[in-house]
Length: 167
Image (cartoon, rainbow, N blue to C red; front, side, top):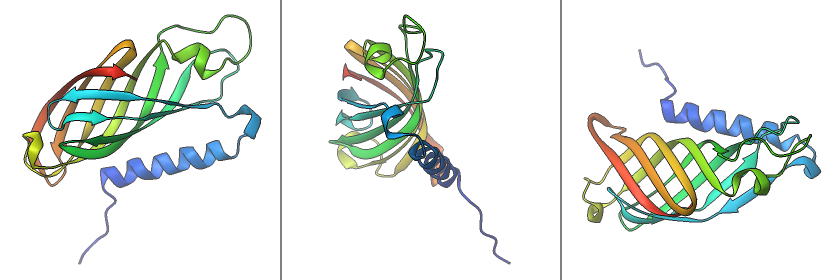
């Protein structure tokens, strides 16, 4: 008898869809979203263009937490990531909620669940990889550290280091 199981990546996609749909119920005036650009040189897909979407999570106490959505288009692969990020600047000055620009556009630290399809030129075998990634990005540079494993053969895994510019 065959049973249907939901894979881990399907669960991540489902959680992301729920978060986006709940965020869609917010008043349009209170939704704070920004786009940031980034470029990274890293192991696995050589060089990648990484636009980053930030959606502020509702907070009236000045906390600066955002949902992050990242696309990846590189010479050695393409993919995406979903996670959370925060600015290192701390709480905004004054009472009430502050905007993303004031709280996060200096330096952003984030943790993301990432999926990427790699191709031959990147040095890794062509496969679909997934795993967690830590990102530190700011005006002066960007550093990433990830642990990527082949979703079809978990014995194949790599640490992925990256350096670049932007967020």
